[in-house]
Length: 157
Image (cartoon, rainbow, N blue to C red):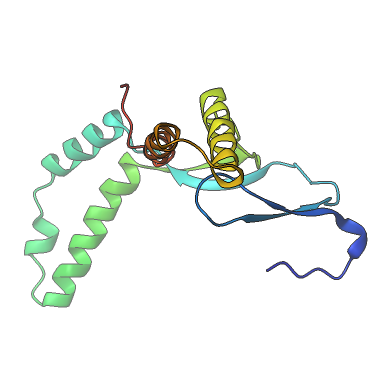
């Protein structure tokens, strides 16, 4: 459900048959105000093979004397965490990175678009006319392949 208080932003509303099942989809086109694409800063750590090897090297160099010299359990855990986090922060430092909000739409390939269009056409034909058993079998087989492709279960056939 979409609830808006500004009707002026609604461009169109329609019901579509996507050819995916016997259900229909609803589409609403809304124009939004200008998007602010200014960069923002994110703090993150870089975990790669070099940093991991550095971390392991730092851990191997430790004698853990600080941990063994403590007497209480809580003190031992605190000493362990202090030593461990020191190595962790040295090997995987926090970096500030400039980011931009991006919408990635390149995952929808031409093959997916073509296959989806073909599925819509077959489904529309199946619903609107009486088709032969052979054509119905083809449509059902295509639907199975299409669903496998859509779910990412198909490897080059």
